Amino acid sequence: MRTVYVNGEYLPEDQGKVSIFDRGFLMADAVYEVTSVLGGKLIDFPGHCARLSRSLSELDMANPVTDDELLGIHRELVARNDIDEGLVYLQVTRGNPGDRDFAFPDPDETPSTIVLFTQDKPGLGGDTAARKGNKVISIDDIRWGRRDIKTVQLLYPSMGKMMAKKAGADDAWLVEDGFVTEGTSNNAYIVKGNKIITRALSRDILHGITRAAVLRFAREAQMDVEERSFTIDEAKQADEAFTTSASAFVMPVVEIDGVQLGDGTAGPLALRLREIYLDESRKAAV
Image 1 (cartoon, rainbow, N blue to C red):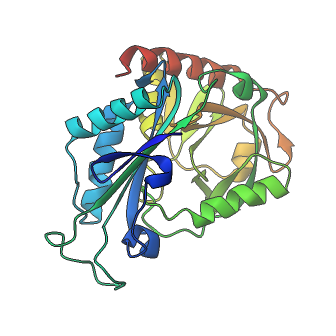
Image 2 (cartoon, rainbow, N blue to C red):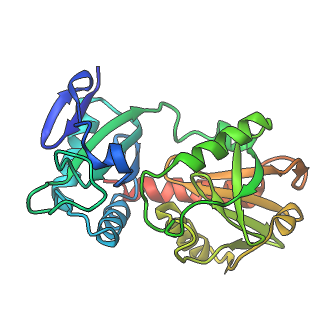
């Protein structure tokens, strides 16, 4: 049985409980992060800490732990659950004010709730799924306007995943005003003439931690990167496409709305970027 962390306590998972009055449950008033574990070490941990702090700040939500305390909790859970390859999920909510109300509770009177748990994912760092690549469909982006804050408001992305599944695909790319914003749980990229094209950072997309690392590595490898919006039609004519996320790293896309990209196999640039990202991230893991 897994050990989980709830408000300062390490508990068996069947004893980890949060109040029905917690605002994360009632209002989706919560933020989260997911950190990958490879070789028993945490990938891109400083970036996840920085984004967590930013998300909390944007929502005027109190951070119940320091970065050092958070690192200790992550490491303890990885050790207790014997995770070699997997994920650590972290969620912070505005807490339990004792009743339901739209108004925020006083943070001095209502402490934040913090929950962490691990997910064991043997083979996470392998490349079987990446070499197969993903098929995606396009759907309208009808989410709220602050996608840069990593909140737990994930109903529409979940619906998008199910739309893709129903269509025989793996994922969906979200489209707003004719342009791709991002995937349901990842940042989106196309490759044309060896140029990597991805939407620039704004409130419209999540500021991906893996995105930042991959683009840095791409530039260090002298790859051409252009941060701009692109359409689904442009994507269908691309040489390659891929997504990035903390749980799938760099994932090639081989088909968009039924249109095969290239020869229908994972593109060489995406696979090379995945290799570079995993090599460098393992070296820097904590």
